[in-house]
View 1: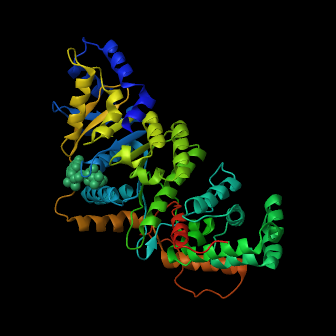
View 2: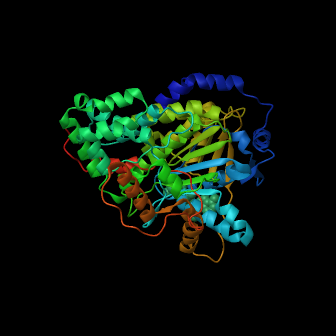
View 3: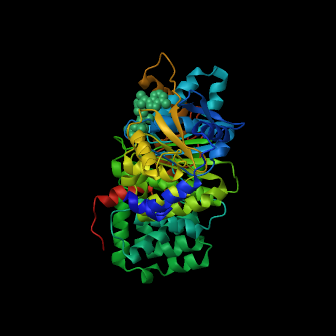
Length: 525
Ligand SMILES: Nc1ncnc2c1ncn2[C@@H]1O[C@H](COP(=O)(O)OP(=O)(O)OP(=O)(O)O)[C@@H](O)[C@H]1O
Ligand SMILES: [Mg+2]
C-alpha cells in the first residue's frame, strides 16, 4: 500500500531518486540545515517542545506551524504527552484548542496536566485558569448539555436540519429508507423552527396525531414550505413510515442521557449554562460505564462535525487547533471522512488547523483519506514507526549526503524510525529539514496522586461546564407541558447556575445515543 500511495502522491521512487540526486546541495551541511530549520520554527510566541540531538532547545512558534498536522507512532511512544505539549503551547496567547479523544486516554493526560498547573497557581489566579477550559463529559449526575437545535449564525435552519438528520441516519448501523430519512429531517426542521427539544411525546404527536399537527404546530411555523409539509404529512409519509420512525425515537429516547440531550431546547440550554469564555475545549469521547463504546465513537464524530461546522460559519478568525485522536475510527465512515476532508481544505481560511493522530496511519486510515491528509498537512510529528508509516516522511527528507545513495538514505531513516526510543520523534515541517526531537518532560504537580489530580480536574475545572441532570430534566418537562399539555412536572429546587457550576457553552454530543438505540436493532418499515 505504501508504494501505491507513495507513487500516487510523489511520483515513482526512481523519479524521486533522480530528482534528489540532481538537487543534492553538497555545500549545505546537515547540521547547519537543522539549525536553520530550528530557527525558522522559533518566533516571538514560541513554546519549548523539546531538545534536539545536540541538546539545543526546539522552540516552536504556533504561527510557524499554523496549518494541518499529523501525529503518529507506536503504542506508548509518547504521542499523547507530545500532543499535550503542543496543545498547551498552542493555547498560549489566546489561541483556541479543541481536543477530541475517542479513547478517553489523552484527555486524562490533559486533565492531569491542567490540574497540576491549577494547583501550582496562586489562589487568586486559579479561577481565571479554570475558566479557560470547557470540558465535554458525562458524569453520574451531571453532563455537558448539547445544543442540537441552535442555529449557528450564518447557517440556514434547513441546512442544520439536514446535518442533524444525516448524523442520525448516516451514522447509524440501520438502513433508513428515503421516506424515513425525510421524516427524520422534517422532525428536526420542526424542532429547529420551534426552537424546541425533541421528546417521545412530541415525536408521537407529530407523526401520529393529525389534529395536533394542524391545530397546534402548523400555526407556529413561519416557513411556508415547512408548514405545507406539516399540513400534508399524512399524504407525504405513509403511516408505516411514520410508525417506523416513532419506533426508532422510542428506542433512542429510552436512555436518560439521550432524553436530556434531545430534549433540551436552545432556550433551556441557555437557562442552564452561561456563555463561555473558554479557549480550550476537551471532549472526553472515550467509552465508560456511562457511555458504551459505540456511543462514545459517535460522540467523537459529532464533536468533530460541530467544530468544523462552527469554523465554517464563524467570523472570528482567532487561530484554532482541532486535535483529533484515533483518526482512523473517525474517518472510517465515508460521510464523515468526506466532511472532514472538505473541512480540511476550507478550514485554513478560517484559521482552523486540524491535527490528526493515529498509532499507525497506514493501517488505520483508508488510503484515500490518508493521501489527502498527508497532502494537506503542513507538518508531521512522527514517533517510533514501522516502515510503512515512516515512509510517509521520505518525500520530505533532504537529499542524501554526498557519497550516499538515495536507497541508503532511506534505509538509514527507516531503521532509525523503527527504533526510536519513547519520547523521541521526528518533527517535520514541509520545506524545512526534519528535526529529531526528544519531547520535554511533562511535569505533574508533586505530592499528589493521579486520582487526586483527576478529582481536582473534575471538581474545579470540568464541573464548570456541566449541568445537573435533574435540572435539565425539569426544564424539558416544563417545555413539553407548555407545548403539548399534560401533567405538571414535580416541583423541585429552582433551576439556576450555582457559582460552582460556572461556565459553559454548548455541546452537540448526542447523536451517539441515537446510534446506540438504533444499533440495538428495531425492525424497520
Ligand atoms: N513528554 C513526556 N513527559 C513525561 N513522560 C512521557 C513523555 N512522553 C512519554 N512519556 C512517558 O511514556 C509513556 C507513554 O507516553 P504516551 O502515553 O504519550 O504514549 P502514546 O504514544 O500516546 O501511547 P498510546 O498509543 O498507547 O496512546 C507515558 O505514560 C509516560 O510515562
Ligand atoms: Mg496516547
